[in-house]
Amino acid sequence: MKRITISGNQENEFITDDKTSMVFLSSLIDTKSGALDLNTRSDLKPKIIEFSDHRCELLYNTMDVWARDYMPIQLTQDVFLGYTYKPDYLVEYPNCVTNWQLHGVHADNKLNLEASVIQMPIILDGGNVVKAQLNGNPCFIMCDKVLKENNVSRKAFDVWWHKWWNDNFEGTRMEYVLLPWEGKRLNPIGHADGMVRYIGGNRVLMTNYLDFDKKAGENSRKKIGSNLEQALTDAKFDVKKIEFWDKFRDDPRFLELLDESWCYINYLQIGNHILVPSLGYKELDEEARKQIEDAFDNNAVSVKLIDVNMTPIVKEINKNQNSGGALNCLTWTIKR
Image (cartoon, rainbow, N blue to C red):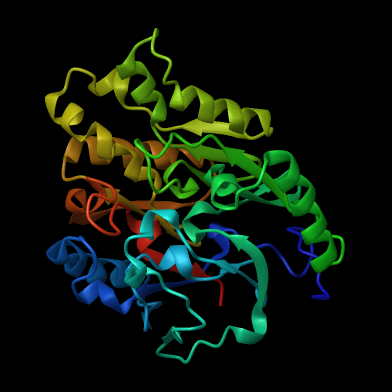
């Protein structure tokens, strides 16, 4: 048993994005990997390094570029959570699956995590975990695709989840919230960091899925935005929302980019600095940046747009090998 209680109110504080100080990138950012656009990724690397004020290192021996998904999740300054990275969307591409321990993933500074990682017996992706605080307790927000991947009912998962945290972390109550999965056809990846982000207090920022509801019309049964908002509200989060439809509904360029516009929520955050993905359309990019900045209200955050058109990376999710993601997906952030 790890002799620690995880809490946001104690010395061993729960590390959410606003407490991070360091960013890591897979060394494959410089090479061909999967179906990703090489030129775009090469352009991204120096921009991310500059944004991080050079607090950026490369991870070596990785099997693909999506570092967020396979690296352990930092819980406190000294404790990380491990899990089994075995995504169903990569069944046909086993060479894209990184096991950071087996493959000896390391950074320039010989990053040593072995003694700090508690292994959780669950199939999970790091991109499907958004860390938050909920009513003073640490909380994981996950897409409920995790139930399918572990072949478990929601009721059984709930019993197991609370018992495991209690047994392994001295009575810690780790809250969790499951978000409705849109389904394999609409979202084969099923990661929470493409749906919502934590912005402090009991507040979260939701991606622009309500735009998709409005496009589908009032009579549509596909209410992915409404269902997502309801799940977050039921969990007692104060939900802020990114929305473009009312302002851009008659804009042909926006309609062309609508399917990729979810990516704005997949921003990179290091401490109080946020880097927002770009879809190469100035008016839409700036509106997204402003809405993200406004969502933080009085919190002192610096929000800027990356000067790289990321459309070639975020479009056509999973069409060939392992693709579809933005800045949070490409990075692994920790507090050092």
